[in-house]
Length: 467
Image (cartoon, rainbow, N blue to C red; front, side):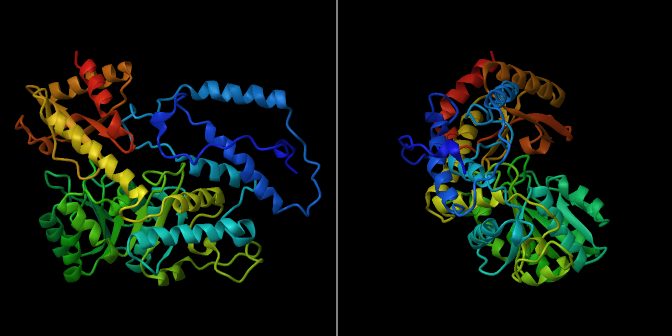
């Protein structure tokens, strides 16, 4: 069936560890050798079928267009490299890339069991592993194309349970919540944050006392600065006001496994088992390719809101299909295969190798923040709660600070250091200008484990950018 894989296998390397910094050629190609045996094993399962007379692509034409694609792809920032420390872009682990590619020879669709039998079972197992990571032995959940779709489903269920009631999220929550609420025709309001970027409990309580609130979104890891909303205090307010509580952990959720969090963040993650729904993105810290999100509900009974009939999709089994608990229809089974395989290699347990990777990311952020705090040219915000560091340039005005931050950002890129810019409340930096408002600050997301070893080089390139 696969004539390209009928010869003897080349020598296989040892199991690849997550260490892109060790690759002398920058991009890991050695792991592709593992596909030979994996494809041969997969093909054995279909040996009884006659060889199909499929039309084969011309090898010369294939080579030509692939090299053209490679040339076009060079017009990218080096998202895989530790010198890229700007946005939330993290390379998938080799095991995820290989498992995803392996699944693409089958191209399963996890909407219905007849379209993705094995991959649907793998999705259920992988999602159950994520639920257990948060302390849930029973749940309803599935993978999505990303955090936006996952949050859409969580807020859709919230709207079904509390029709027309207002959704609240902090002013530092992801913009997707206000947009989704508009799509769902649910009123949305933002709650102010304190100087640490966390939802302000006093402001939340005042709004709850006014009534009409159906859902509160707690963000455990804001995408701007990595702040963790005070979940214990929000849970206490739920006892008095009876709202539905959704935890948006798209970025920060895996930090539930980390052992080096600050007490406030640790307290929030320790209580996440008590929320009503959770969203997490395995394509952020979970070592997966885009797009791979996940939505979880504590009460499986919410599945009744997904009920629908289809005259043709479900016919191979009477078991629950993932399409029956999802708003999306066709979904890539390859994403489930990649996630399942990754979690087999790196179990989601505290103290394990995967947890240590997260701790290295956080340690890199703490070390970077400490170095910046010693530099009189900068004004650092509060210490990072997860792995995002933000800092402003010391200047006579917020406008001048913003201008100089933009200059440093551009110079750093030319030097080979890729940062980000973020417009943030001046209060995050103690508002040394006394004018309130916002300032454009520099921002780094140190979400690659190798960022810790690369920190001296990052600091040297930053210094070069200040010349």
